[in-house]
Amino acid sequence: MIHEVAELTVTPQDMRAFEQAVKEAAPHFQAADGCHGMRLEKVIEQPGQYRLIVAWDSVEAHMMTFRESAGFEAWRSLAGPFFAAPPKVYHLALAVAGF
Image (cartoon, rainbow, N blue to C red; front, side, top):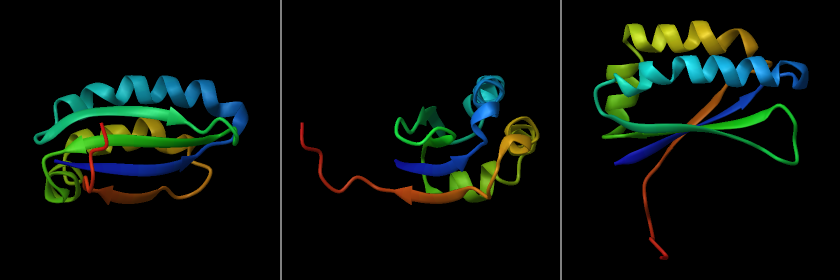
């Protein structure tokens, strides 16, 4: 399993509406093949900065299966209007589990 991390920026006045849009988009992730969970975290020190963290079977499950699906289009139509900058996306694999 890998994790997708998307660094998302929205204008501070749109934070509440953006968070609601992500809640509405959650079922599209839940229905996606290879998706095991998602969460949105906000950066405390920087209003308007978020991290979307999604657990996937593989990079391909995210980049090919989901990105080419109607679920991805629905996610972007809900959340995309709030993006103040293009998202930065990368994938993580576990290197060490501390405890």
